[in-house]
Amino acid sequence: MTASVRPRRRWVGLLLVVLGASGCTHGKGTSSGAAVSPVASPAATSPTVAGSPAPPASSPAPPPVRTGTVPASTPAPDQPAPPARLPASSTPRPGSPAPGSPRSNAGLWIPAPGTTWQWQLTTPVDLSVSASAYEIDLFDNGAPVVASLHSMGRKVICYVDVGTWEPQRPDAGAFPGSLKGNPVEGFPEERWLDIRQVGVLGSIVAARFDLCRAKGFDAVEADNVDGFANSSGFPLTAADQLAFNRAIAALAHARGLSVALKNDVGQVNDLVGVFDFSVDEQCAEFQECGALTPFIRAGKAVFHVEYNLATSEFCPVTTALGFSSMLKHLSLDAYRAPC
Image (cartoon, rainbow, N blue to C red; front, side, top):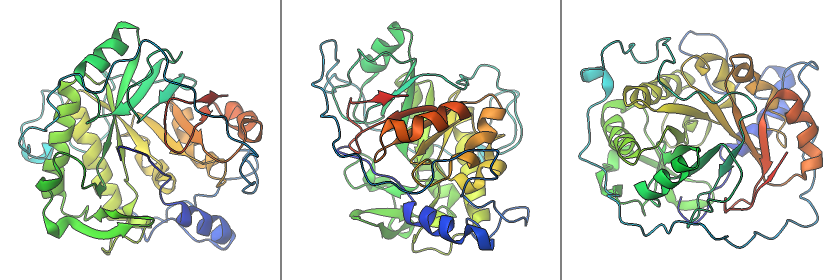
């Protein structure tokens, strides 16, 4: 997604909020056979923003990009290296755990609850935002942008899609037709991927993570890791998703990169032990914030954005939960209104 991004699995979130009281679960099962927790927020001890209020009467206009930016055109090798093998079939680094198993966090950046952040997927990146961590696009930014942020003491998260195919990416031709499923709702050019083909898809993702590492990123945000809860065109189960997501975490960790769980709120309890922080869209609007609190209890940040609510409608709740929340434009440009 180069020009804009959008929330994922939101029709699923709305459906589960409606059906949650009758025991509807997020997905068809789990790897352990236990039901996946509903995405609606748990008990009254975890406050949530009620309802889905109408968008604010006016959204602040995005500020002009300020001085001190690094153009995205700075030369950098944006073509991923030839696909690598999935860690399960390659030689792990000494002391590396098996994919999906509990591991030590030694050497990885694990952002703590309350860490300030900026999420910008447009270019050029505004380097003047006061935030401890930046999330920027893998392909649209070169190593000099990452180095500039590092020189100012910022950690940098590599945004990369792993669960859907985007035709504009430079490695789009590496995805065989058998991987491609239904179009993403509202974006007919983008297609869900068959995450059960872990070997084939994993090698492509590994090459992308190699590029994240080569450019100097500290972490990755692997997007679209909830295909099982969407109309993907494949009979994906919750167990398939758990297996894939754990493999994704292992790919990142094998390269010395920490990794965020993006959305997928119904599987947080199963995955909080292998992911290093959370990135979530619209948990307040869709009454899902309580499901993300296991990350906070584990000492890991929840990086959270809303697009349609005023800050007064979600900041009191998410700040109390320990989240790092902000209002963003859906285009994920430089504009931000942090709590």
